Amino acid sequence: MKTHEDEISGKAYDSQLMKRLLKFLYPYKSKLVLAVFFLLIFAACELLGPYLIKVAIDREIATKNLKGLSIITIFYFAIIGLQFVVNYLNQFLTQWLGQYVMYDIRTKIFSHVQKLPLSFFDKTPVGRLVTRLTNDVETLNEMLSSGVVSIFGDLFVLLGIIIIMLHLNWQLALVTFAIVPFIFYASFLFRVKVRDSFRKIRLRIARINSFIQENISGMPIVQLFSREQKNFYNFDQLNKSHLDAHLETIRYFAIFFPTIELLSSIALALILWYGGLNIYNNTLTIGVVVAFIQYAQRFFQPIRDLSDKYNIMQSAMASSERIFQLIDSPEQQDTLQKAVHFPPLKGKIEFKNVTFSYNSEDTVLKDISFTVSPGEKVAIVGATGSGKTTLINLITRMYELNEGSILIDNTNIAKLKVHDLRKKVGLVQQDNFIFSGSILDNIRLDEKNISFEKVVSAAQNVNAHKFITRLPDEYQFKLYERGSNISVGQKQLVSFARALSFDPEILILDEATSSVDTETELLIRDAISKLMTGRTSIIIAHRLSTIQNVDKIIVLHKGVIREIGTHTELLKKRGIYYRLYRLQFKNTG
Image 1: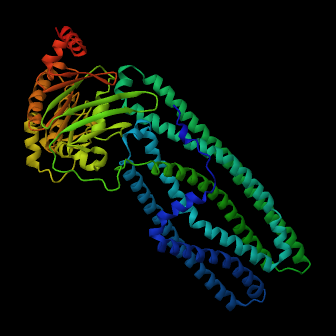
Image 2 (image 1 turned 90 degrees about the horizontal axis):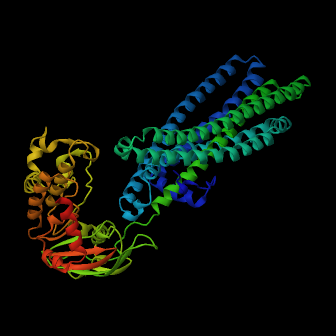
């Protein structure tokens, strides 16, 4: 399995992406400034410590001034205490900022994902979206909490150390800095190598997430067809690839950090050698050499940190690029800026020359035109792939038309607010989704305006109340994910109760009885007759025996309307409907 979209170049820094990221920090700008302030105080304490030691050695210890030494020691302890306090405050604020920004980004992504058109989810694996909301957002948190703020402290410390070392003894400073070109060259090589490794890791974790999500969702098929070993092998290959990418990164880190430590040790050896010679010649004091040693240790630490932060920044840029690609995916918009609200609905539906395709190659519906009068009950039949489900998806604007128009009460649905439109349409699908939670919550979908009494009444009307009251806790009975702890027929009855409790003016039943047993089908037929009373109803069914009493039957074949009429009229025509009916009668007979 490959997720080509995760192959991202991953610049180390992208000003446009950074500007967009910083917008999430803007609401917390005061705390960000405070965190930087604390960091600068911490960095100043870092710079002051070695200088105090130099003063203590050269001025107080050399002159045996115990009082002066005591004062400097107290001052040094005060600096250590101040460092502890400001470091705590800085760490707390930066982590706090990272968590809140991560919260805001996840909220924005999830809110945006819910507004995307159905066509987006047709071509986007769920595991990929999960990766965006989890791994990629966490990478941004690492940058915000460990990179954006602390990089100011590292640069301040580096600049301060350079100035102080040049001030103390510029010759010894140049000897120390002689190692710096080698460190920068090693850091450059490390960044180049590890960048590719990090990119591989991100790609492979996205593949693993997609594979796991797909296989857990399809576990019944996996077990039914004894695919466990084959799927395990495929997962093992993905997991091994992910492991190899991580091990490659570990190898680079294992080479880089010891190399930096080696170069740092060489720098310290040069300081001792050159400084020792100058002490011997009385051109340098011991305090200056000791201070240089401590400054050198502090000098190389930010360089190591900056190399690490470079990798964090590079990973964050790649993650932010993918996140903003998702956020920039166009939402399903009301086509007019001033979309009209629904007037009181009568229920007339009219298709005018509707043509639709999911892609530019295959046309699913071709020049479809028909009218459903208010309160009329219309069935749509046809072979698998004829376009029946697509047709009802267009009514609810799950997809937008390529050509033609759909009118409800003579108003083009493209001019209506999507939210208003879908509130007026009740849809019971072939495969109804059940959320984890109580039966009550699944019926009213957390719509507080729907009272418990209305839920019970809806369940009674669709013959669901009887099985619900047999369950422990009845309407508070907790359903597992996808309703795995109740039967398919019971899930179907719950979905009927859900549709009825929202009291829609238009009712659409998509293969609503195709997955239930005969006894449950009889209950649903009775429920359907109650549901359709006083409502414009469209029924899609393979079982032609369930639609013989509708007002009109539309026969679709290869995306084209071939026949329209009542059950009796279509049988007399001896056309497609007649052949479908004879085929089913023969099979059932």
